[in-house]
Length: 422
Image (tube, rainbow, N blue to C red; front, top):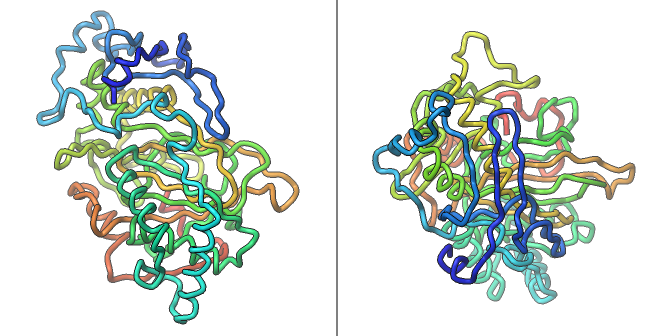
């Protein structure tokens, strides 16, 4: 991918990251800068995963070594970690010319096939959570969705399925179609919390005080568990609220080239994570030749909603710097996707960081942001999970344990969100 870009003479933008006080993006002459293509808007700079000499990227050295930045290159990467990773996961915005690269638009024939499958499933009088490829047959659309699933697990790491109109379906029928689509992408559904809630609905009571129900922007993060995170957009806000994604592999390549000491910090087992249970573990893993990142700021730093207990260890300066540098690079690389009502988003929770911009709901019901999130895993393509993350995946996907399906938003006490930050 990188070789093809360079061979095509791609003009790369310049990025200067002034650290640690603020981040300033200096946009170069890239033809991709500040261009809008439908619902696909390229923002920030364009970076090459290889970080060749053609890219003007200045990433300051560690506080203790800034007087001699050359010392940073003397720090080795952790044992077994590659100097660079050449993989489709290591994408840049320049790889996606138009939304067709990552949005699958359901055709009229696709939607007719979905309606037939939904009607056939309901005729079997099965519970909606029992949807699978056998009882929800999609002979034409199914192979296309499997291809998307493979690309999510082994390619770019994200896709949007677009074209459903939530207003034309009952809540139950929309949920059945959503479950039918995603069973071809990742067939196992995971719990959101210890009560077994399978759906996380952002329109539950605002008094919950959780950022999921706020209108503020959220920093880049992963979910606590789930190979793939999916969300169905039942409604969009008046302004803002776009989905914003950034590639973990490209962030890694930048750090490996310029700040290997930060990768050493991220891979140490001394990060004191407070929620949903206290543990010390790495934030980054290279496990069975796959790079995995799993973190969120709130369990590490606390927030107004989730205050950090005073008796727990605080982050040291190196850890704070690592978090901030990951956020800065992710924002430099970020790609924004304007969400439409009916969109089904799927992102690889190992290789894609995501965040949400702030938004404003309107007065009318059709101007209110309404998302329903699920955690997924493929029984055939699922990745091996590092030991430090095994408990979270076991809690989510184990056969034993409660599974509760609330198709409509529930009162606040139905969701123990103070223990689950994402």
